[in-house]
Structure formats: structure tokens, C-alpha cells
Image (cartoon, rainbow over all chains, first blue to last red):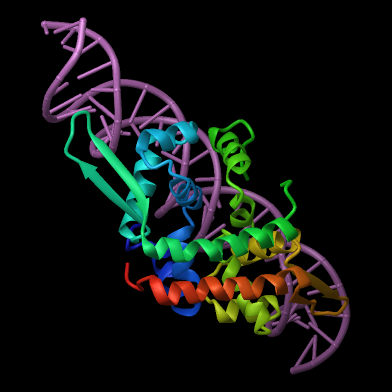
Length: 117
Length: 117
DNA sequence: TACTATAGTATCTAAAAAGAAAGTAATGAG
DNA sequence: CTCATTACTTTCTTTTTAGATACTATAGTA
């Protein structure tokens, strides 16, 4: 959580005001966001499945990033009233329209970004 | 700097192995990166100019992010042997090919990402 | 001799992001 | 009455990122 009194907070605000890409990066910038969109798209559509796919993510992080994606309306969280609980994630239409753009970005990366650090 | 002994480090590595977009995000993900590309493109091509454009960025951050962009071959740093020193930044061809993709991403954001929060 | 300009570095501290580990809730199975 | 299952939440700690501030170099100018 960001303190509204911090320089970080006001810098974020000012940057947003002058950099038109900023809000997009805010939505996609989280460490696991794009991977999550990608795997949900591939039908790893439940909490447990995503964790199996990415065993290194903690439940806390997975939960937090899914929540943000849901808040930004890229992911739908459908709860089934069953026991044990079942929750299914899927991409929104908004997220679907993003996929081709991400693919272009990916292709750019393949062409131009070296793999090593 | 990332400790090679940390969980953060190994997670980064494992994520990179399964998420094809990861390396692109590593290059573009820094807080000021895209703004910098954008302003250098608009000919704010010197350290001081960039600071004037973004008065909230510290010299340390500006310096660090420019260095990373240079390392990732998105920005060229040309030094003139003058006094006081003059250094000019410009986009590489690689960065030029990125611009249209970023524009698509930007357009997606305009259409679909809310401004608030 | 001090002062300006430019483009930074260096060191220390604050804030934010991420990881570790334990706990919660509800129900059905044994 | 304990255990398994699923999808988390909570608290605490470590790691990483970012900001604050002071400092450097060099030549020309006052």
C-alpha cells in the first residue's frame, strides 16, 4: 500500500499526468500480471492450477495480483457455492482485446531483446 | 541490485523460463522507462532537459534508468568532449521499432483503462 | 580567487514490494 | 472427532526500489 503522504505517491501522480502510458503500465506492471493473464487464457483458471503452474508464487502474491486484475476488469472471478470452495477465473473482453497487443510486444521482444541479463 | 541468493532472484529466473513476455517487461518495467523513451523521442535529449521535464525525478533515478536503457540498447549516449560537459541521448533503431507497439498499447489504454485510482 | 554550468556519483534513509509461515472457513468422508 | 479439500487472509520479516542530500570534475568567466 502506498502512503498518500509519501514522495512516491506524489511522483506517481505527477508522472501519470505527463506520461500517457503510465496508466497502462500500472495495470500490467505487477510482477506476475502478464504471466497470469497468459495462463488464465490457457485455461489454468483456478487458484490451485495457477499455483501448480507457478510453484514459486506465494498464495499472498497470487491472491493480491488476481485481485488487482479483477479490480482493473481484466479478469472475472466466478465463485461456485460449493464445498470445498470452487472459484474460476477467466479473461474479460477487455483483456481479450489486449492479447493481440501483448503478442506484438512479445514479437518485438523476440526480435530485439536479448535473453541474458 | 538483486541478491543472487534471494528468493526474489530465483523466482525471477523461473518466471522468465515460463513467461515469454517477461524479458520485455524487464526492459520496459522501470518506473520512468517509458516516459524517458517518450521524452527523448520528443527531443528532450539531455540530462538537464529531462530533469526540467520531470522535476520530480531525482538525479540518481534519472541516471540509473538512462543507464539501463543504454544497456538494453534502447538509448544511445553520445558524449561531447566539452566543458561544461555535454551528453546527448537519442533512441536506437531498436527503440524506434518499439514505438508503434507502445502506441498500440497506449491506444488500448485510452479505450479501456480508467484514469482514476 | 570565487562562481557558474553540466552531468553526473556516493551514501544514507524511507518506503514499497515480496516472501515465509501460520491460520481461517465450511463441509463431507472415515 | 479428526482429516482432507480449496481458496484464500493475516502477520511478520526480508529484499528491493526510490528519495534526500551532499559531493565531484573541469574550464571559462567576473
